[in-house]
Each structure stands twice: as C-alpha cells, then as structure tokens.
Image (cartoon, rainbow over all chains, first blue to last red; front, top):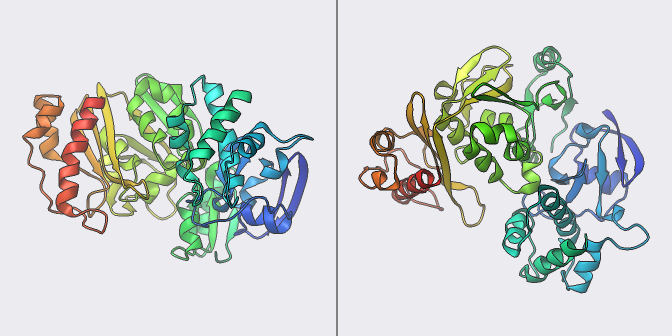
Length: 156
Length: 264
C-alpha cells in the first residue's frame, strides 16, 4: 500500500492504494468520480483522458501511487457554475451521440487548445484531426467533434 | 493487473537497492508500454521501481554540440525542447510523432529504448545518430545497445540515466504508419554525422532496429532521394505479418529512406 495525496478538481483527495491501482480506478472507485470512462483499458481509446498537472494523460495507464502531490482535473472539475466553453461547444455542435467517449474528447480538446495557444500555433481542422489520434469515437464520424473543438478554441 | 509493490526512490542508489531487494523488479519510467503489458498479464513483476523521482532524470541540457536528455524526459518534453531543436531538430520531430498527445505526456525516452520494441521510433533515431546511452554503470554506444527484438545490452539492475546525441550535419526521419494502430510499419532515420552517413531502420527487422549498409553507401556518395533509387534492399531478415509482407517492408524502406533524406 502507498499513501497518496493529490488534488482532484481543486480538493485534496488521499487514500491508501495498492501499487497496481490505476488512476482511472482511483477516480472511479475510490472517489466515485465516474465521469472519467474506461473504454478499452488498453491505452488506445482515450475515453479515460484526464489532466495531470495540466497535461492530458490516459488515466487507465498511470498508477495512482505515482501521483502523490499531483493536481488532477477530471471532466467533473471543468464547470465552474457555468459549463466550460468546451462543454458548451460540444452541446451546441452536437459533438456527441452516445456520449461514452465525450469526457475524454473534452479533456483532450481543452489540452490541445491550451497547447496551441501557448505555442502560438493555429489549431486548424487538420491539426485537430491529427491531435485526436488517441481518442476514438464509434458514433459520430468525428465531424461534429472537430467542429466543437474548433468552436471552443475561438472562445477559450 | 496482478498485485505489485510500488517504489519511488529519490536516488540511483535507492533505486538499485529497491531493484536488488525485489523478487522481480521492473523499472517504471513512463509506463505507456509497461502498464498495458502488465494489464494483459504479459508481464507480472513483483515490484515496479519508478525512476521519475530521481533528481536530474528529466533534465535536457546542451554542452558544446551535444545534447544530453534525461532518461525520464517525456516525448512531449523532447518534442518541445529548444535544446534538442538546436542540436537535432529531426529528433524533436521524431518525438512529436510517437503515439498520441496523451501518450507523449507520459512516455519517456529511457523507457522506449529500454523496451526496444521493434516498431518503436527512438531506437531508429538513436542508432541513426550514433547516440550514447548513459547508465548508472557505463556509457554504451547505440551500435552496441540495441541487441535484438525487445533486447538490449542492459544488465540486471542497470538503469539508463540519460542519452547523449551529438549534432549531425543533417538528419531526417520518415515513417509509414500502420493505418489502424499508427505504429511504424517501417521507419527510417538518416543522418550525416562526423563519423559518416548512418541509416537506421525500425519496424521492419526480425531482430529489431538495424543499420542498412547499402543505403549508407548510396547516401555517402550522393545525399539525395535519387541516390536511394539504385540501392538493392532485400527482404531477408525482414518481418512478415498480417500488416505487411517482408517484400512490402523492403519496398517501404526505400520509400521512407527517400522521404527521410528529403526531410533532412
């Protein structure tokens, strides 16, 4: 067992976790934050993407024990009274159908917009499609997801 | 995943002690291959020793014409590093094309080369550049480091601490991605270095990454895409699987070598 204390969505969260506990399990089973989805559990689909210290990572491929002191943001931590612009854009552009991949899409979307803004690069449609390489959606055909991220980028 | 003991030592000495004290330890550097492998029960170490807490392990620094990259530097960090860009922009480009953005935020250069996956990008880059792999015990030339598929010259308990890359005159990398998994079906890194032209091929060889003497000779006499046309790339020793036959991979080696030379 490893004692870990991390900040999750702005609040301190701690627990004694076995070495093999994945961040996705820690969030879902220990903290009951079930907005983070586990789709493939093989690091490919991206439904489990959260932010660790401001960067998008696949929470099914990180050990909770390794994150003592880390700041974690999940999809539940985005809305601050009002929905985050990325959430609004997914709603406005019909960026989801079944919704299973959506938490990961939104977290990856925010991450890419932030990175491109920081680096002063233009987030084109082509760039968004390339950046979504690690997020799989089996409903939408991606068109409205790409539109949602482009829309949100303009207001973030 | 089976039960595992987690350690996060603050020094190399503590890491060596943790490895030595375990029944079967694996080093965790980014976990983007190790953890999926453990989830599938293809690896079942009793202990994992996380080296990311060791000071200096994520540093990237330039001295003279050489950049030294800490073993726990992530692919994203290497891709964005102005130090790496100064010495070898082709290596930064290579790092920017590994996996996907979330994987690049966790995966590390040390983890990638220690695993020596036959389709990994870094082995081609480091072998192509004639890099030096620094461990807690010695320095190993890339030519001696990658010894076979998923096999390296690392001894038990030996820990990669950094990778040093000298500035090439020019270098380029091109890969043909598997249409589904996006792994390199063939990747070719070409470099003109002080010690001659080097061409390293990943994704294709049955024994993992390898250098190609014919392509090196052709590019030595004429550094251009056209020079590759006359080279005979055979299919002996190349992988054949559902994704590509050995003949197809042989063809891709030439095409990727041309693109890599053009990108340099």
